[in-house]
Length: 107
Image (cartoon, rainbow, N blue to C red; front, side, top):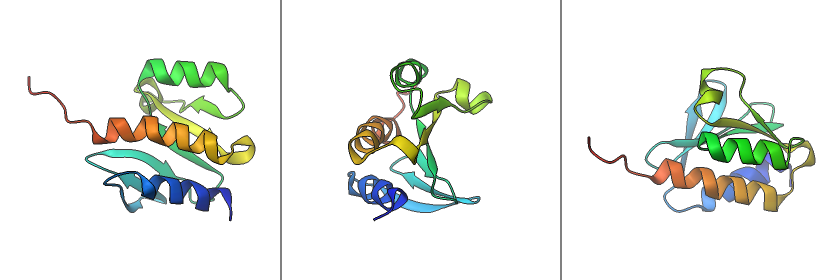
């Protein structure tokens, strides 16, 4: 099984997750998109809070990096599959899934 297949299998095992095309990527969503898989299968983008992103990038800079644009400043983070294992993927997906499943509080 390739790492992109492992990532997809884990993402789809999370409650309420569905997948859909997203430009040249595959998006994983619950209420909102929480992850996208790159077309080349070598990486994925995940939705973290900026604090979660900072932590992940500091602890495992070989696996995680902020997307270098406005999306990155909002917490969107690249997971490089090269050094990642299934446990790394699951932990990241569970964290991101929580953001995709969250309901925004009314203002």
